[in-house]
Amino acid sequence: MKYIEVEQKFQLLSSPEDLKATLTARGAKSGAASRQVDTYYNAPHRDFLAGSVISEWLRVRIEDEAASLNFKRWYPLEEPVKTHCDEFETTVADAEAVTRLLGALDFTHLTTVDKVREEWIVDGVAVAFDNVAGLGEFIEFEFKGEADTIQEATTKIEEFIAGLGIQLGDRIHAGYPHLTLGIASASA
Image 1 (tube, rainbow, N blue to C red):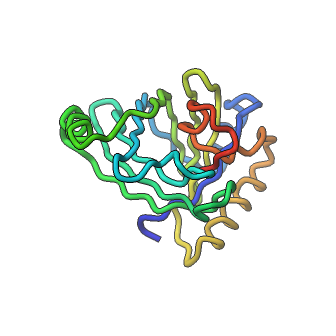
Image 2 (cartoon, helix red, strand yellow):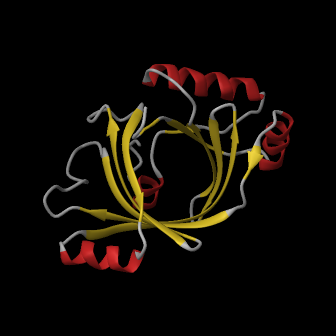
Image 3 (cartoon, helix red, strand yellow):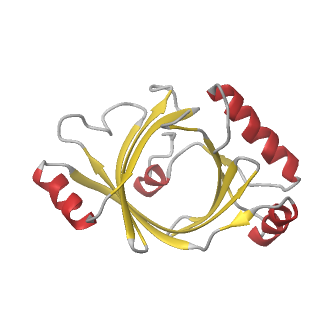
C-alpha cells in the first residue's frame, strides 16, 4: 500500500504519559520530539477549497534540519468522513526554493500548522503525539504495517486502539489545516 495513508486522529483528553506507559509496556520505540512547521498552499489551476468537502492538500514541511513536499488526496472525495488518502511525499534540499517556486507558479498560502510531534512505533502502527499551536493536544494512529486492503489496515488500527485500554477523546475527522481555517465540517 505504498503511497496510501490510513490513519485515525483523536483529541487527547487524558495524560499522554498514561498512554506512553502502555506503549512502552507493549515494546514501542519512541523517537525524539520534533517541531514541524507545515505550510499549506492552494493551487491556481484547481481551488482546493471550492467543493463542499475539502479532499486535497499541498504542504511544505520544515522539521528540524529537514524539509519535505507533500500532496494528499483524501477518499471518498465528496464524503465528509474519509477512510484513507493518496500521499505523495518527498524530501527537498531547499525549502525556501520550493516556497519561492510555488509562489512563482501562483500557488497561494492557505494556512500554517505549527506543532511538536513525538512519534512512537509498535505493532505496525505509528502513534504520534501532537501538540498543535492554538489547537491543543491530539493523537494520531497511522498504519505502517502490511495489509492488502484499506479495510484491513483500518481494522488493524481499530484493533490496536481497542487493545490499548486507554480512553481517548473524540475522533477528529478533520486535518489540522481544516481546524486552523475553521472548516469544522470538512474531513481529512
